[in-house]
Length: 432
Image 1 (cartoon, helix red, strand yellow):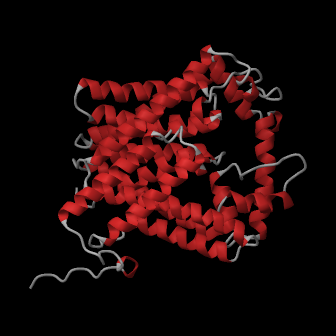
Image 2 (cartoon, helix red, strand yellow):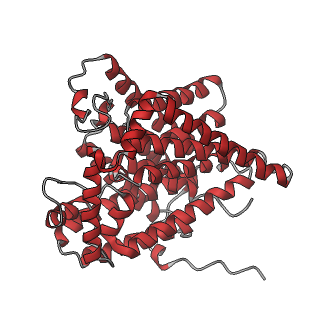
Image 3 (cartoon, one colour):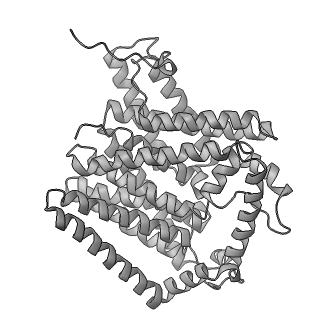
C-alpha cells in the first residue's frame, strides 16, 4: 500500500484555493523574480516610500501566488519565524503603547512577506538564486563606488562622523548613499561572503570578475567606514566562510587532519588579527577606542543606553513593550539617563528582549540553531545549494557579531539581506 501523504498544516489550508495552470505559475514566478531583483538591486538607494511599496508588492504577490499553488510544508526555519511572529502579536496585544506597537507589527509582517516570496521563488526555481545575488551585488557595487569616491571629495560632510570626544578623534568615515558609516558597513557585511560564494560558483571570467569586484570594493568600503561593529562583523562573516569552505574541502581527509588543519588555521588567523590590532595604526586606534570603556564617548553612550534597556526588560520581562522603534521611542524616555537619547537598545539581543521579552529571544535562539543545522548540512553534500547555504550561514554569523553592540539589523537595507539568507538556508534538505 502506498504511504498516505502527510496532512496539510492548518495554517496553509488556504493555499491552492484558486488553482492555477503551469503557465500561470511560470508567469507568477517570473514576476516575483523581477520584483525581488528590483528590491535587492536598488535597496541602498530607494526612498522609504519606494521601499515600502515594493515590500508591500512582495507580500501581495506571495498571497496571490500561494492561492494558485498547492500548499507545501512548514520547515524548521519557517516554523521558528512563525513562532516569533506569534510572540510579537501577543506582545502587541499587551503592550503599554498598543498603537505604536501595532506599527512595528505591521512592519514585521511586511518583511515576512518578502521572506515568504523569496522562499517560494527559490523553492520553485532555484536558478533565481544567482539572479537575485547578481542584483544584490549590483546594489553593493553602486554603494561601494559612491562611498569610496568620498575619500577624494570635500571632507566637511564626512567630518560630522568624527567624534571629537572619542579616542579615534579626527578619523574620516565614509557612508555612501546610506548616510551613516555603521549602516553602510551593516549593509555590506552580509553581502561579502555571498559575493565570495558567487565568485567560486559562477562560471565565466566576466561573472567571476563581477563578484570579485563586489567583494574587493565592499571590503574596502567596510574598512574605510571605520565601523568597529562592521569590522568585527566582516571578520566573522569572512572568517566563518573560509573555515566552512575548508571543512567542506577536507571532509574526506583522515580524521586527524580534519581536526588539526582547522585548528591551525584558527591559530594563524588569531596571530594575524593580533598583529594588525597592534601594528597597523588605523586598526590600533579603533581597537583602542573599543577597549577604552567609558573613556570613549561612543562606548559611554552605548553603556548608558544598555543600562536603561536592562531596566525596561526587568519591568516587562515576559512579553516586552511590543515590536518596533515606535514602541521603543514611546517607552525609552521613561528610563533614559539625562542627555542620552536613543532610537534603539544598540544591541540586538537587548532589543529583542525589550520588544518581545524572553519568549521572543528564545524563538530567535531557536531560529539561529535551526539555521546553523541547515547550514552545517551543506558541508557534507554536493547539492546545488550547498555553497550558497555556506555563504548565507557566514552572512548570518557576521550580522550576529555586528548586532552584539548595534541594532543596524532592523534597518531594511540590512534586514532584507538577512531574510534572503534565511530563505536560502530553509531550502537545504535533509538528503546528503
